[in-house]
Length: 305
Image (tube, rainbow, N blue to C red; front, side, top):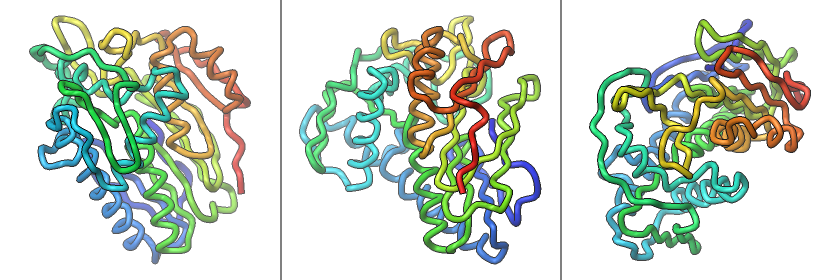
């Protein structure tokens, strides 16, 4: 988990999406407005993209029986971003893993808890099966979309930008470890501690404006399935939780969406992640199952003003 450290000008923390929201602003008077903008953006994304809501647009797509279905501009944008993430990662980040997650027992009531779940049948699916033509989306019958690998990070980006535009001050938004900044950073940058659990090694970093920082974890949001530990990052090749070669992977990038796409893909890539991330040139930090750190791309990231 990544949390701002140091002495922010003002901040607020509350719960959404079975995780925490942490907003930091450089103008104390702007905090109430920033919080309202963040909640409004989260509400909008939740209404279109939550597979846990029967009344969401994405749930309606699961019932569309393969028909081309018009969707809102926001959902079209989110699905387009998810498909682009799949393309860029060679399918490692795949929005059609919703059925696999359901089969493994994952829903929004079990994060960070260990309990028995009953597996259910699932349909083999791949991101290339989803059609997006403007505002019309085609999802094959039996395929369930889950945008969790990209939508929360996009939400962080959108929340930070929206809060900045509304207040004119510097803003850092942290949605459960997906961090985005917008507007002028503090003089000494945004100070962030990257650490998933108290047992994991920590890394203190400083990031600047218009920056994203994401950490993907195999030790959060996990539960017991048939005597084995399952977690929420699915390897689309198997339909099962990715092999936990890495406890966590953190990536810094110009956007949280880009950072999270790569950190999630790295969990799926397993032992190949170091070489693949090195090829991006972006700062990255991987903590293996033995709590050893592997840093790439000049980690920690340099703050941009």
